[in-house]
Image (cartoon, rainbow, N blue to C red; front, side, top):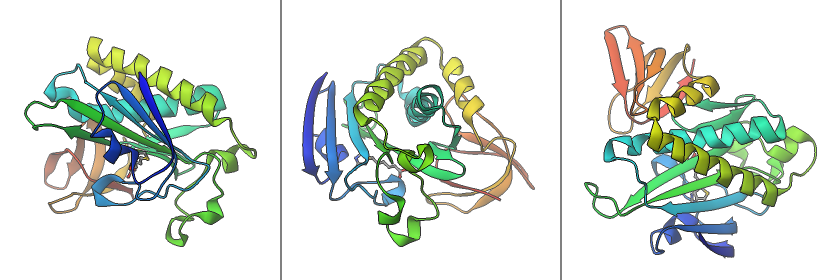
Length: 236
Ligand code: BTN
């Protein structure tokens, strides 16, 4: 892996589109961190911000599972190395005590029918102070420092996360259902009454039953089963 380390950049994901894979783009802070669904990502000093640029050697069908696989890797590292009870809210928010600690934004570059590379952007709230987040986020986010009561070693954590991502991406190539089963162990969405705000469609409310082999969420609504490919989940 080549690595580029910025002290400040607009967005590691944006930069990731211009590098050849495999490559890691790392930044101490971002001035226009990108979040899912066109949102921004608070990216000041103390957090971990990186984009992993790879040629995914999974099939196009498996691409939608990439964010779930990455969330699983992060949740596993939080549990196994920091002893933090991390959970995953579908599709890929990593939560601790219902507060968001990590977010993932996967983008593809190239034609959608034949992607050249995947840009896997990861933000982890590590050593920031929660009080420094924008006020509308303060009751929705947590940082590892706040949870552990002391700052964490960001370098060690980054290495563990990259190792775990490598392990799970290999597993994805072998047998997709193995990885999705691990995702399910970490899920705090399955088995709950939820509402999903869909990107360009109506809201759907129902009982979250399962995810399918592409990572789509299956919910039981008043009108029967529905499959959702992307959106924002709210636990009722
Ligand atoms: C989300 O909305 O939950 C996804 C947030 C993804 C943030 C990361 S930080 C590193 C990378 N660069 C970006 O601009 N965004 C991602």
